[in-house]
Length: 154
Image 1 (cartoon, helix red, strand yellow):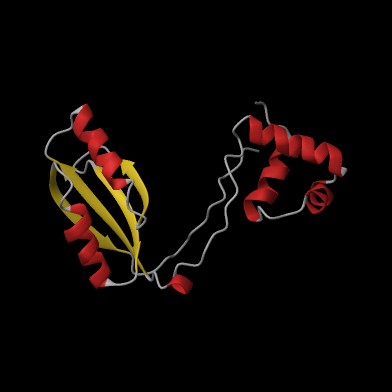
Image 2 (cartoon, helix red, strand yellow):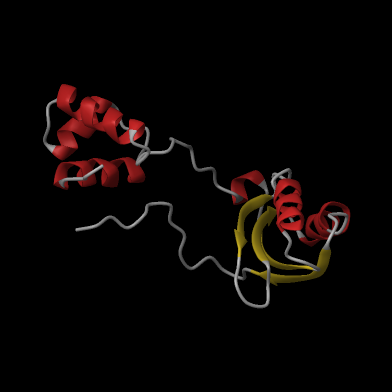
């Protein structure tokens, strides 16, 4: 889908506040409501807009510890990678999981309440996954920047 400047304005507004009404969104991007809604529906059906979510405050939910964990697997066969990915996706604490290049096979980010919960996650959830060779954790001392809005062209 080719995005024009109005589509990009719509995306910028919705990335900041996905709960905007169509009338308010149309006002902000200088369209009437009907064409604005048609554009939003086109962005949704083309997959440019994947979904709408509410972003919860981790600290308000008692999840004050953000931890990055590097996980190396004993082997990188198609089956071992698929099994690891299937098993890691079962855990709500895992916020992100990336297949990496270099020394670490995977990098995950987990949100937990405290060190005790992290220890339980590693010992009871992570280490039983077959094929894990090495686990290394790094703690986020301070969140300097966090955003969900992607940079838009133009």
